[in-house]
Image (cartoon, rainbow, N blue to C red):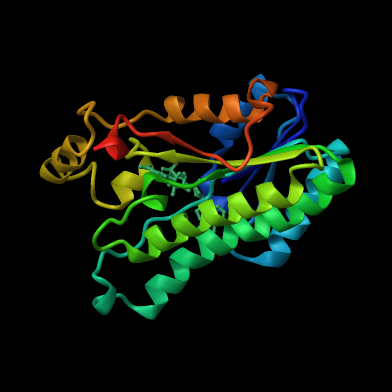
Length: 232
Ligand SMILES: NC(=O)c1ccc[n+]([C@@H]2O[C@H](COP(=O)([O-])OP(=O)(O)OC[C@H]3O[C@@H](n4cnc5c(N)ncnc54)[C@H](O)[C@@H]3O)[C@@H](O)[C@H]2O)c1
């Protein structure tokens, strides 16, 4: 999911695959944010992202904050056994998707001389994880892309950071066969010194901080929210 919004709380655009959001979920969002819009967009397709950002700007007049959050897991295999198709799919969404979003967001924010971007990386953007080379490489790439863009736009009123979550209890883990299998889930939980999975709200709190003026001197950083995973 890629979210662009203006700083007024009620102006939020949610861009995602069509299947990702139910009418009920959109109604719930609109209750809090009456002007919220949904834009169908596959972040791995350059022109769809361009159209989505144009729609945000034509609807709201500006793009003040962007969260580039879309991501997928993918097949688990050692590098030598990984299919080219699996590699390209994960890189296409998790790395090319972030580039596609940043390219169009930054061209708009540069005109405004103002903006904040938060990219969703992972602890697996900082360390390896056996059988997930595509995901690990993409998330390392997201951190490098963020650091580079942060340097390029540091004097243009634009801050760009990443969040690096540990394992968070979301549908991604269920799709990856983690939360659906008690032994696998317990193994993953035990990798975190706090001995639990993270909650979506704990990641959202990091985003709110990085999107707000409370983090006005922070750019190019990777904020780890991982129950101590990387401290080991
Ligand atoms: N859950 C975790 O343990 C964890 C840990 C570290 C990082 N992350 C990252 O956090 C982000 C969100 O993951 P999540 O756990 O909420 O997973 P999720 O599966 O619940 O949500 C991912 C969202 O991305 C959307 N998406 C997937 N492919 C897309 C595409 N091509 N175009 C547009 N949207 C697309 C999905 O429709 C979905 O709404 C991802 O970038 C993921 O890599 C998750």
